[in-house]
Image (cartoon, rainbow, N blue to C red):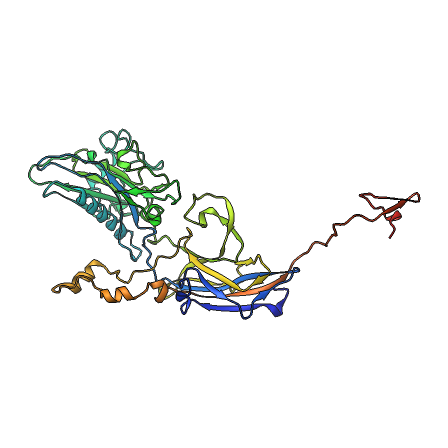
Amino acid sequence: MADYVETTQEIFINSEDGFGTNGGDQVNKFRLNFTQEPFEAQDEAILRINMTQFNLQKNFYDVNETNNTIRISNTTVAGAGDDLAMSLGDEFISIPSGDYKNQPDIVMACLAQSIVDYLNSKLTTVGGSFSFVLSAGTTASTNIDLVTERGANSGRNAGGGQVQPSCFTGAIPGTAPQGTFASPFFRVNKRKYALRIVLTLPGVGTGDLNNLNLVIQCLNVPKNVSQVITTGGVLATANQQFNDSYILFGGARIENNVPNPALSVNPEQSFSIQVDSTNTKELTIVNPFPVAQGCNTTPNLYLRCEEAGNQSSATLETAGVNHDHSIIPSRILAKIPRVTNTRHEISYTLENVAGIPFFTNVTSNYLNHLIFSITDQRGRPITPVSISDFPNSVQQQIRNGTTQALLINQDFLDDTKTQNFVGNLFCDFAFKVSKHKRKLQKKILQTQQPPIITNNRMEFSGVIPNSVYSN
């Protein structure tokens, strides 16, 4: 309980109205002004902010630009006629933003399709194409055979000149979501996938996918002066090179940048990539770790307050510096968990009815404003949903038979602000500002010590015996 009960004030906030037009938005850097009734504490007291309630509906996508992007690169393959020919490539590719209904199968199928789309964009053989299946083979026997197909012929394991994750053995799992299974044990879901990429060439064309030197990386590289990534002459965005795709896809995290990995010696890989030794037009991509079960990478949100003086690890503070385990000053006020209610509605909710100790002491004795922001666990703002963001299938169905290119009217698109300014991405919360007594050291006058009388004469000493002290 506060020591000054009469000065404790409960404050209720809804960021929906007005905050989007005053220098910030509804979830990032919105300011509360107490200019009419500021809070003040004297030297014998401190001000404290204590969170009591928070709620934010999950009106943003589980899969978004902070976790849906990988880097993929390949070398040039020279071919003539119907043979395999590829142009040099080094790009960031992404799966579509959206909610995937907690289905890792759909997430990995979208990843496979994105990889296939990239490979087809680099394929210069006329009439050739890449396709995929979520399987290590069409029969149980080929699944078993692929387990042992590694080594010099694999092109990606020992002898193939690629660096594998240290915990990955190179074996293809027998848990393919499609195909024929030898026993019920093959149906055990471990959320590890074999993406089978198949090359089709016209006529009698030949080609060896080992020559691609395909490299796929889940980059988690903070964007600072020493780590700036450029692909194809285009500077990477902060979210592209510092991405949580390794969590979503179950890949190995890569924290080092090298220019065009496909051209470097022993590039790091986030996935196992091996070419079938019996058919070099087929390769299999396997994630070494399970795909994120909830198909999201935001289990908590973090409420930050500019006046709050707290501590956290560097990992939770910002994506702009290298992350380590050092404890540093931060502005984190509360950690808000992801909650699903009985109607399967998802929100980020904190109810401090049990006295959860999310509080911080204000460093100044005078409080006339607070600036709040809401971020993910990496210190990144929440990604708002774009107005023009609709599945391609929906747009195509609506515009079939018309000349309309976009589902959203361009005039509306130009005149409307984003979701975090005028849309439904906002929060409501409550907190208390209270005043508490604190221990004060006795004030010591920094003056010359009083004289001491000993043997009828005055002396100056650092020690004052009680028996001889005199005013």
